[in-house]
Amino acid sequence: MASTADVTSQGPMLRVAQQVPRTEAEGPGHRFALWLQGCPLRCPGCCNPEMFALERGTLMSVESLAERVLATPGIEGFTLLGGEPFAQPGPAADLCERLRAAGLSTMVFSGYTLAELKARANPDVERLLAALDLLVDGRYEKDLPETRRRWIGSSNQVMHFLTPRYSPEDPAFTSPNTAEVHFVEGRLVINGWPALADRLRP
Image (tube, rainbow, N blue to C red):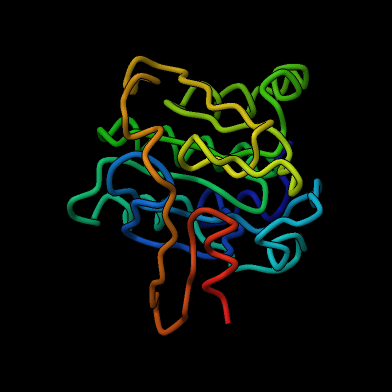
Protein backbone atom coordinates (compact mmCIF):
# COMPACT_ATOMS: atom_id res chain seq x y z
CA MET A 1 0.00 0.00 0.00
CA ALA A 2 1.28 3.47 -0.87
CA SER A 3 2.09 5.88 1.94
CA THR A 4 0.84 9.46 2.02
CA ALA A 5 4.24 10.53 0.71
CA ASP A 6 3.89 8.21 -2.30
CA VAL A 7 0.70 9.66 -3.77
CA THR A 8 -0.85 13.12 -3.49
CA SER A 9 -3.26 15.19 -5.55
CA GLN A 10 -0.31 15.67 -7.93
CA GLY A 11 -0.06 11.92 -8.47
CA PRO A 12 2.81 9.64 -7.39
CA MET A 13 5.59 11.45 -5.49
CA LEU A 14 9.26 10.78 -4.83
CA ARG A 15 11.36 12.18 -2.01
CA VAL A 16 14.38 13.60 -3.84
CA ALA A 17 17.82 14.40 -2.40
CA GLN A 18 19.59 15.84 -5.46
CA GLN A 19 19.73 15.73 -9.23
CA VAL A 20 22.35 16.26 -11.93
CA PRO A 21 20.79 16.79 -15.36
CA ARG A 22 23.81 15.65 -17.37
CA THR A 23 26.58 13.34 -16.13
CA GLU A 24 28.94 10.66 -17.42
CA ALA A 25 29.92 9.47 -13.94
CA GLU A 26 26.75 7.49 -13.13
CA GLY A 27 26.44 5.04 -16.01
CA PRO A 28 27.01 4.71 -19.75
CA GLY A 29 26.75 7.77 -21.97
CA HIS A 30 25.33 11.11 -20.91
CA ARG A 31 22.63 10.54 -18.28
CA PHE A 32 20.22 12.39 -16.04
CA ALA A 33 21.01 11.26 -12.47
CA LEU A 34 18.51 11.47 -9.62
CA TRP A 35 19.34 10.67 -5.99
CA LEU A 36 16.41 9.69 -3.78
CA GLN A 37 16.27 10.55 -0.08
CA GLY A 38 16.12 7.86 2.57
CA CYS A 39 18.05 4.64 3.10
CA PRO A 40 17.36 1.93 5.71
CA LEU A 41 20.67 0.15 4.99
CA ARG A 42 23.10 2.92 5.99
CA CYS A 43 26.29 1.21 4.85
CA PRO A 44 29.39 2.31 6.83
CA GLY A 45 31.53 4.61 4.71
CA CYS A 46 28.69 5.53 2.35
CA CYS A 47 29.54 8.67 0.38
CA ASN A 48 25.99 10.01 0.80
CA PRO A 49 25.20 9.78 4.55
CA GLU A 50 23.16 12.99 4.32
CA MET A 51 20.67 10.95 2.28
CA PHE A 52 20.00 8.37 5.03
CA ALA A 53 17.21 10.24 6.86
CA LEU A 54 13.79 9.38 5.46
CA GLU A 55 12.25 12.71 6.46
CA ARG A 56 14.67 14.96 4.55
CA GLY A 57 14.74 15.82 0.86
CA THR A 58 12.09 17.41 -1.36
CA LEU A 59 8.82 15.79 -2.41
CA MET A 60 8.49 15.97 -6.18
CA SER A 61 5.85 14.49 -8.46
CA VAL A 62 6.73 11.75 -10.92
CA GLU A 63 5.01 13.87 -13.56
CA SER A 64 7.27 16.89 -13.00
CA LEU A 65 10.41 14.75 -12.80
CA ALA A 66 9.58 12.92 -16.02
CA GLU A 67 8.99 16.22 -17.79
CA ARG A 68 12.32 17.57 -16.54
CA VAL A 69 14.27 14.49 -17.59
CA LEU A 70 12.67 14.28 -21.03
CA ALA A 71 13.30 17.98 -21.64
CA THR A 72 17.05 17.51 -21.07
CA PRO A 73 18.84 17.51 -24.45
CA GLY A 74 21.56 15.07 -25.45
CA ILE A 75 21.07 12.32 -22.85
CA GLU A 76 20.78 8.63 -23.60
CA GLY A 77 19.62 7.47 -20.22
CA PHE A 78 18.45 7.96 -16.66
CA THR A 79 20.14 6.74 -13.47
CA LEU A 80 18.44 6.44 -10.08
CA LEU A 81 20.59 6.38 -6.94
CA GLY A 82 20.27 7.29 -3.31
CA GLY A 83 19.65 6.88 -0.61
CA GLU A 84 17.96 3.66 -1.61
CA PRO A 85 15.71 3.65 -4.70
CA PHE A 86 13.93 0.47 -3.62
CA ALA A 87 12.74 2.26 -0.47
CA GLN A 88 10.31 4.08 -2.81
CA PRO A 89 9.61 1.33 -5.35
CA GLY A 90 6.14 2.29 -6.57
CA PRO A 91 6.76 5.88 -7.70
CA ALA A 92 10.31 4.95 -8.79
CA ALA A 93 8.78 2.29 -11.05
CA ASP A 94 6.29 4.82 -12.41
CA LEU A 95 9.12 7.17 -13.32
CA CYS A 96 11.40 4.55 -14.90
CA GLU A 97 8.52 3.07 -16.89
CA ARG A 98 7.70 6.46 -18.35
CA LEU A 99 11.29 7.30 -19.22
CA ARG A 100 12.08 3.95 -20.82
CA ALA A 101 8.86 4.11 -22.85
CA ALA A 102 10.14 7.45 -24.17
CA GLY A 103 13.38 5.81 -25.36
CA LEU A 104 15.83 6.42 -22.50
CA SER A 105 17.83 3.63 -20.92
CA THR A 106 17.30 3.12 -17.20
CA MET A 107 19.77 2.21 -14.46
CA VAL A 108 19.49 1.85 -10.68
CA PHE A 109 22.09 1.55 -7.93
CA SER A 110 20.72 -0.41 -4.94
CA GLY A 111 22.23 -1.61 -1.69
CA TYR A 112 19.93 -4.63 -1.81
CA THR A 113 21.00 -7.67 -3.82
CA LEU A 114 18.84 -8.81 -6.71
CA ALA A 115 18.05 -11.99 -4.76
CA GLU A 116 16.85 -9.94 -1.77
CA LEU A 117 14.66 -7.80 -4.00
CA LYS A 118 13.08 -10.80 -5.73
CA ALA A 119 12.48 -12.49 -2.37
CA ARG A 120 10.23 -9.62 -1.31
CA ALA A 121 7.56 -10.68 -3.82
CA ASN A 122 6.47 -7.03 -3.83
CA PRO A 123 4.62 -6.00 -7.01
CA ASP A 124 6.14 -2.49 -6.96
CA VAL A 125 9.66 -3.90 -6.59
CA GLU A 126 8.98 -6.28 -9.47
CA ARG A 127 7.67 -3.41 -11.61
CA LEU A 128 10.80 -1.36 -10.94
CA LEU A 129 13.07 -4.28 -11.82
CA ALA A 130 11.11 -4.87 -15.02
CA ALA A 131 11.61 -1.21 -15.99
CA LEU A 132 15.43 -1.39 -15.80
CA ASP A 133 18.17 -2.05 -18.31
CA LEU A 134 20.96 -2.05 -15.69
CA LEU A 135 21.07 -2.75 -11.96
CA VAL A 136 24.11 -2.38 -9.70
CA ASP A 137 23.33 -4.28 -6.50
CA GLY A 138 24.83 -5.00 -3.09
CA ARG A 139 25.93 -3.14 0.03
CA TYR A 140 28.78 -0.68 -0.28
CA GLU A 141 31.84 -2.18 1.45
CA LYS A 142 34.38 0.54 2.16
CA ASP A 143 37.18 -2.03 2.68
CA LEU A 144 36.60 -3.59 -0.78
CA PRO A 145 37.10 -0.70 -3.21
CA GLU A 146 36.49 -1.59 -6.86
CA THR A 147 39.49 -0.71 -9.03
CA ARG A 148 38.66 -2.38 -12.36
CA ARG A 149 35.00 -1.90 -13.21
CA ARG A 150 33.59 1.54 -13.91
CA TRP A 151 30.71 3.07 -11.93
CA ILE A 152 30.88 0.43 -9.17
CA GLY A 153 31.91 1.40 -5.64
CA SER A 154 33.04 -1.89 -4.06
CA SER A 155 34.15 -5.20 -5.51
CA ASN A 156 31.31 -7.23 -3.96
CA GLN A 157 28.72 -5.31 -5.99
CA VAL A 158 27.35 -6.79 -9.21
CA MET A 159 26.32 -5.14 -12.48
CA HIS A 160 23.22 -6.93 -13.83
CA PHE A 161 22.47 -6.51 -17.53
CA LEU A 162 18.70 -6.98 -17.40
CA THR A 163 18.06 -6.31 -21.10
CA PRO A 164 20.21 -6.54 -24.27
CA ARG A 165 20.50 -2.74 -24.45
CA TYR A 166 24.06 -2.82 -23.08
CA SER A 167 26.76 -5.47 -23.24
CA PRO A 168 29.31 -6.31 -20.55
CA GLU A 169 31.84 -6.56 -23.40
CA ASP A 170 31.52 -2.82 -24.11
CA PRO A 171 34.87 -1.24 -23.13
CA ALA A 172 32.97 1.68 -21.56
CA PHE A 173 32.24 -0.58 -18.58
CA THR A 174 35.92 -1.05 -17.77
CA SER A 175 37.25 2.42 -18.63
CA PRO A 176 38.71 4.55 -15.79
CA ASN A 177 36.34 5.84 -13.12
CA THR A 178 35.60 9.54 -12.93
CA ALA A 179 34.11 12.11 -10.57
CA GLU A 180 32.46 15.39 -11.52
CA VAL A 181 31.77 18.79 -10.02
CA HIS A 182 28.51 20.55 -10.91
CA PHE A 183 26.63 23.66 -9.87
CA VAL A 184 22.95 22.69 -9.86
CA GLU A 185 20.47 25.45 -9.00
CA GLY A 186 23.19 27.33 -7.11
CA ARG A 187 24.38 24.28 -5.17
CA LEU A 188 27.73 22.51 -5.46
CA VAL A 189 27.26 18.82 -6.29
CA ILE A 190 30.17 16.36 -6.48
CA ASN A 191 29.31 12.96 -7.88
CA GLY A 192 30.97 9.88 -9.32
CA TRP A 193 33.35 7.22 -8.07
CA PRO A 194 33.25 7.42 -4.23
CA ALA A 195 37.01 7.39 -3.55
CA LEU A 196 37.69 10.15 -6.06
CA ALA A 197 34.57 12.17 -5.22
CA ASP A 198 35.57 12.21 -1.54
CA ARG A 199 38.93 13.78 -2.44
CA LEU A 200 37.16 16.58 -4.31
CA ARG A 201 34.83 17.49 -1.44
CA PRO A 202 35.75 20.53 0.70
